Length: 211
Image (tube, rainbow, N blue to C red; front, top):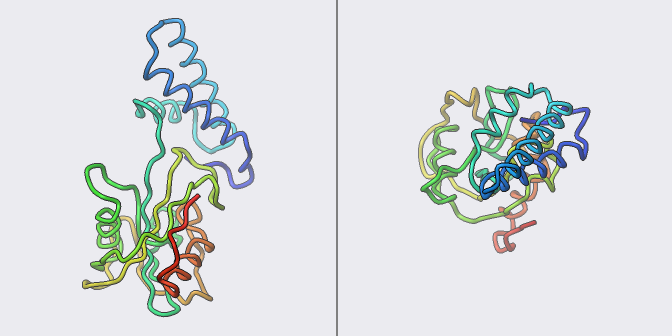
């Protein structure tokens, strides 16, 4: 669920905070009256999100209902692979824009394993993780506001095998010069993040970035 491009306002983030408070309250609540109040908060958050996104309230409430337990950020992993001044990107079928290969991390596996798996599935290349470049809070970067809240793990990787192959999620795989990046899927990666990954590629001993 993403905010409208023309309305990336504090309202979206306030709604996320209210939803998180509601979810945490529902996780530990014992009093029926308090449960009713937390459900009211959840409904208010859903109304706020409907007002600043293109998602109907019924779907928002369904998404909220699918989340249980203490509210924590999700983990998105991205793999950066360079050939000198060119970067490997994949084209997302969902929005026909380009991104570093990656996606949600799977439970039960390490972030490094997950990013290698995502690279293989989305690009056809087998890869090895060389370095953790950054751990970013998605809300602190130039992404459209989006629920659920996520932390983004960027890894510097190298190709060890395979060939460029598309998937059910990607329609193209290619290397692009850093000076000529194609239209990016901004909810997944920003130009500044790709640039920072390239700086780590050029200066491998740079410390891991974090918010």
